[in-house]
Image (tube, rainbow, N blue to C red; front, side, top):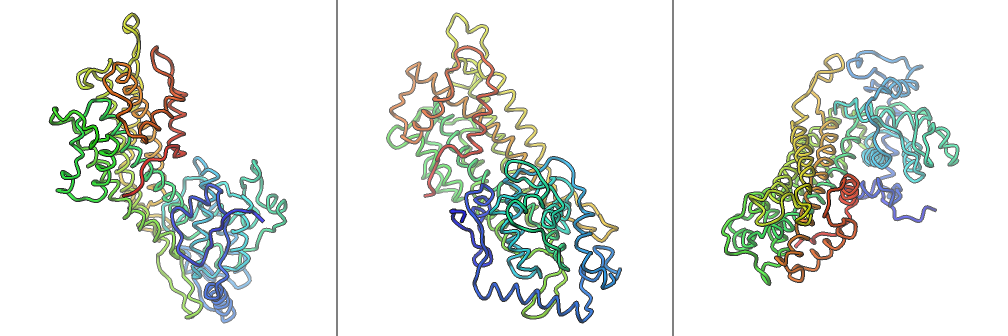
Length: 516
């Protein structure tokens, strides 16, 4: 019906790329029809119904929530309990997650519920699938989660949408979910016992945002590598700094890969560069060591994020086949908090590196003969033209703010909810911090990339660098950038150009490297 490739839930482990494809709207979703998956969903639901009939005590089903666990809920009120949970948590504040982020949140919650340990109905699972496929996306405030018991407040907006009581993005507008459902011949559901808790008590928001952050960081790592090569060319750098024999002596795999990519971009074996200057400044010479820390951490970060993505992370878990109710703390977002606190430090270091490279490009004491501030002004007007001076100031401002955000969120646990939640992860704050650091770092990289291209223009014009000695990928990227970046020969506002370049980075405009 939708004509898109499908991601199947409940059959195979999902990847970061699966979540991001769902977020972008490029794929549809469906539930597995495998007998073992169906058996898990059916057995958990049947076991819950059996316990309710036998007056079993189940946290969040026949008791209050959190510190109210000692409050026994009369059987007549059990059906209303999950609806109340979705309502009293409807107190989120701050900016709203984007529509694509909302789709990712739906996908990550569906992934956890599809593990078969949450005691949810087929009706709920199918409605989540229908929301994704019909692009009915809850509008979710970003603030209000401490990351344990998971993302309760932001996920209440998913639960509220399912019952028809919250706003959603649909058909280019904001409307009530009940209205969007009606347009798609769907109906809100009545939450069964445990379903409010199953939807809200987990790590879906922080994990969805972590998937986006990982993808952006992965691209940023490669882009920073290319920018380093461009800056080395512009500064008449020494290509021997990236020699494979040199990096064989310090065999961090990611660092070696980054050095190899730079060496490749510099066309080192065909046109070795400036072998007479023994050592460039650290921001060029040590770039593989800075970028390499991010490159080497990415596989580890992926494992943390994808383990969380493919986990059952609400409480309690319902083992329907073995007939156990398992009370624990899988809603705790510690692994995502650690991953995102780590990622934002690694990414901010790339901002710092790019800022130092741009500082060298604009400074006549260090740029090996380039014009002051990379101005392309003619001799008669050079006195009043300032080129990239303010761009470099801006890059330092973005860098400082990125570095400021590297304070780990996970160390700021606050005791909440009458001291029941007395140790919490702050994973969602860490994920949001990581996105802010990425945004700022992308702004720095856009500034440095444009500075490097301007510098190369000057080298070509002065006959100090022959474009034909560059590799085809470097030439292709350079030619693409100059197609929208007119030569800076007279001062002009560069905000629109910078914003366009940042957007190009966010959209991964340039194909960079293949893993060797």
